[in-house]
Image 1 (cartoon, rainbow, N blue to C red):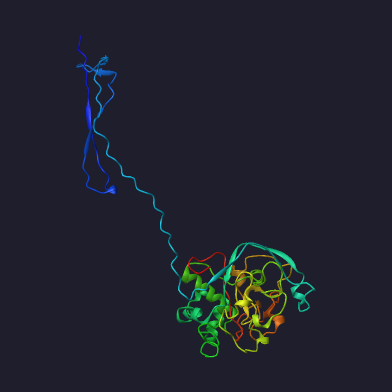
Image 2 (image 1 turned 180 degrees about the vertical axis):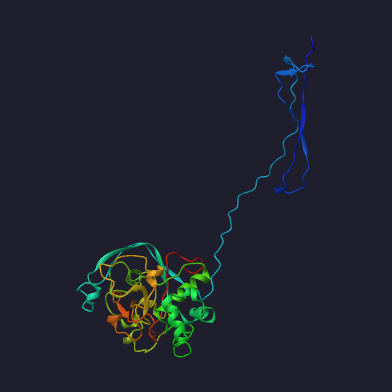
Length: 347
C-alpha cells in the first residue's frame, strides 16, 4: 500500500497599512491555517481519499490585525458658482402655473385687442430683472455682434449690411448712453441678434420673451392692471406723468416691481417680444423662438410703454406693434428671457 501524504500548508500573506492613513508601508505576516484537503495525489499520480487525523493540530494566528484608525466624516465643501461678468443680465424666476391674460370691461383703458381675458398655463421660466443696459450691451458692439452673420436672422442681416448698421441709433449720444441707462435705439433685429450673441458667449440660451411670458412677469397671476396693483401711482414708474422726459437708470423704481421682482416693466423703454403682431386671443402658446418664426421683416409686439408713454400704455395688458422689425427709436430697448436659470447670474 502506498502511504498517504499528509500535507499541512502555512501561507504567509502580506498585509500592508494603507498610505491613506499615513506612515510607511510595512508588511506584517499573519499565519493562516488552510483547511485540510479531503483527497491527495499518490506518487503514481492517482487521486486517493485522504484520511484526516482526528488529532490534527490547529494553527491559530497570535498576531492581532493592524488597527484601522477611524476618520470622522466631514461635510463636503459647498462650491459657490463662479460669478458671471457684470454684462450678463440678472434673471428672476417666474414660477410655473396659470395666470390671467388680457383685460375685461372693468378696465376702462383696455383696448379691444386685449379682450377677452382668459387663463393661460406656462412652465417655469426666467426673465431679466431689468432692461438690458448700455454697459451690458457694449460687449456686443465692441465684439463681433454686428459682424457675425450667425447671430442674425436672414432679414436682419440683409438690413444691417444694406444700411451699414454697426451700433444702436443713439449709441454716441450722452443723453442716452450712460452705463446704467437702458440701451435704446435698437431694432427688433438687433434685439434678436443680441440674444443669440449672449447665448454664444455664455453657453446658455437667452431669447426674447413671448407676449404671454412678458405679461405674466409684469402682472403676476391675478390680472392686475399695473405691476404693483390696480391703482395708478405716478411715483412707481418712469412714464410721461413722471415728467422726466428721458430714460432713467434701470431699477430706479423698486416700488414699481412686479410680483416676481422684475423692475421697470411699466415705463422707461418699450420692450420687444418674439410674438408676431395681431396674435389673436385666447392666446395660443407655441415656440416663438424657432428659426422660421423669427424670420421676416414683419410687425412684432412690444410691451410695457416708455418714458414717453401715458399710464394707459404702461399697463401690463397693453399691446402695441412696431410696423417694421427694423424700426429704432430713443424709447425702444429690450429685456431678455430664458427657459432655465444661469448659475452665477443671480437668478
